[in-house]
Length: 106
Image (cartoon, rainbow, N blue to C red; front, side, top):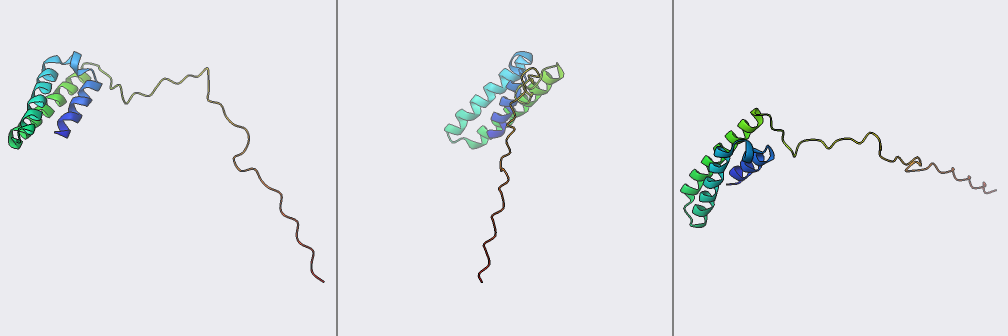
């Protein structure tokens, strides 16, 4: 079930819900059926539906990427070159003066 959920999430990140609607929609339906069967303790059916949902979600993701979609969660935010981050010029651990030696005992 978690593999199917992860596959659906990955497919959403590449806009498979709009780029590959048939595979994505069917994957969501099968995942819904898998959750229902799991609630009814029909674990074999739940596993079957979850595996089919994962396969279709992966196919929808692949087709969406092949169509030119870009994964939104892995894209780096644009760097703002006109406003660089502030840099503190003071050192983190400033050097300290050595302690004066104690006078010798005579």
